[in-house]
Image (cartoon, rainbow, N blue to C red; front, side):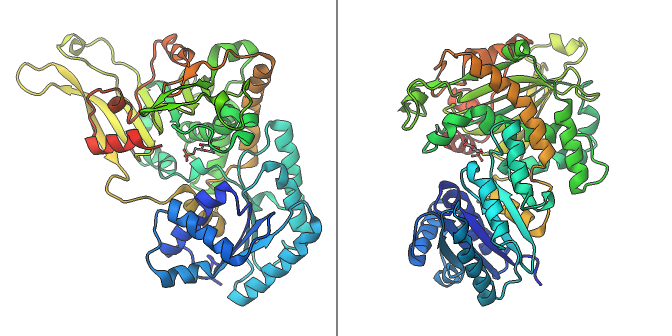
Length: 516
Ligand code: BG6
C-alpha cells in the first residue's frame, strides 16, 4: 500500500481557505509528483452543487492562486476527475451516512486504501460537531488511517479551547489530531532549527551572554479583507500573536532536543512557553501595545480606516496591531527582551526575526572614522527567504575607518517559487508526521499568556484609531523599545520604501516593497 494514498474530505470546500490555499496545494503536490495519482477529494459544504460546477470552482482557484499553472489538459483531467462534491449541513447528523457511502464508493472505484484526511476549513464553532458526527456516522471506521486537520483559531481563550479539545478527543485521539499553524510549514521557519543546531558559529552566541534583544516582525499590507465577521471577534492578539508569533518564539528560543524526533522537539518548544513571563495588569500596560488603523495612504493608494471596512462595527475596539516586550525567564534567555509586533495595513509585507548581539567592550575602533553597527543575525521568513549577518569591516581604501557590511544568503532568489506551507503540511500529515503541527499543551500555554491581556483590554476602552494605514503602528510601539535603549531594525523592503540606499539588489527590494 502506498503511503501517499489518501482521500481528502474537505469541510468548507466553498470557502476562502479551500479556494486560496487547499486546492492549489493539492494541485502543486500532484504536479510535483509528491502525491500519488491514487488520491480522491470530496469537497463538502452546505450548498448544493453539481460536480461540474465544483470542478469549475477548483479550476478557478488554481488559475488564480497556484504556483503551477494549468498547462497540460490531459494531466488536468486526470487531476480533476478525482474531485467530488457533497452538499451537507454539518450539524445534521443524518446527512453523514450519505457522505460515508460516497467515501466508500469513491475509495472502491479509485482503488484507494481507506486513508482518510478530514480537513476542517470552516468556522471553529463547527469543529466539535463535525468531529462528533464523523465518528457517530461510522465515517471514521475505515481500513486505513484517519486523521483530522483543524485550522486555527483553536478556541478564543483557554476555557473554550479546553472544551473544543474535549469534543475533538471524543472522536479523534491526540495523535490523529493535527492542529495547523501554517507558519510552521514555512520553509524558513523550519530552517531555524537547522541554522541554529547545524552551525558551530551560532550555537555559542545563542544566549543571554551575547544576545542583547530579539525582534520579531510580522507585518501585513492587507486589511481585514472579507473576514470582518471573524476578525472583529478575534483581533491581532488572537489571530497572530497567540499562534504564529508564539511558534516563532519557540523555534528561536528552544533548547536543542534530546533527539530530532517529533515529541522531543515539541517538548523543548513547549518549555519555552512555560518559561515565558506571565504579566500582571500593570505589566500588560507597560509591555503590551495595541493599535487600530485609521485612514491613510499605503503604497500610493488611499485606504479607509478599519472602522470603515465592510462588516466592521463603526465603533469597533478590535485591535489590528499588537507590539509587546516579552521575556523568556529561563537560564538561556533571562534578561533578553523579545520584542514582537504584528499589524495589518503596515507599509510592507514582511516576516523577519532579528537577533541583535551585545556591543563589544570599548575599543579603539569605536573612535575611528565611520560608523560601527551592532552585529545582527537576521532570519528572513518571507517574502524573501534567507538570512543575513550584519558585521563590521574596515572601510575600503586608504585611511581605514569602519563600516557595517552584510553577508547575505537568499533561499528563494534563484527559484521561481518554493513549496507553500500548506503543501508541506499536507505531506507531513499524510506521512503521519505531526512535528510541525501544534501540540495541545502548546495551545494551552499560549492561551495562558494571551488571556490576561485580552481580559484587561476588554475592561478598558482604547483610544482608537491610533495609527494611520501605511505607517508602522502607534507611536507607543516605538517607545516600547526606546525606553530600553533599543529601536526596531528596518525590515526588508522598508529601506527602499523610505528611500534609503539598500544593500540588497534593487529588483528584489522592489518586488518585496510591492508585495502584499
Ligand atoms: C492567518 C491570519 O493565520 O495568517 C490572517 O488569520 C493573516 O489574518 C495570515 O493575514 C498571514 O499569513 P501569511 O502566510 O500571508 O503571512
